[in-house]
Length: 143
Image (cartoon, rainbow, N blue to C red; front, side):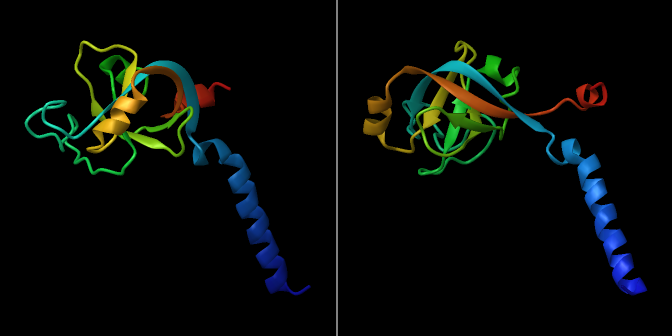
């Protein structure tokens, strides 16, 4: 083994050691699960407001994308703007893109574009959702 090969091995081992030490920093998220009431909504003025394709966060809604609105109490639990959400019984991951009227509690609204039939078919049901939140860095240091 020549010097160049030995140097390459040392560099690779040092890099792998750094990766091992920084594992928690590379994945600073955890998934939380809660039960919520889930309904569905559409981009229609009578269901939202006079500009049904713009969310309360200012995002543009486009049919076919997986978005949800959340009740404002869930914002305080970590379901903030652009949080990733998995809904039991549904495929894929949704993004929090809208927030609901203050009167709602512990509720999500699945965005279903302009397909009113699909929204009505979904109806109202209790579901478990899992959502990704950033791990508090102070709690990592105290472990």
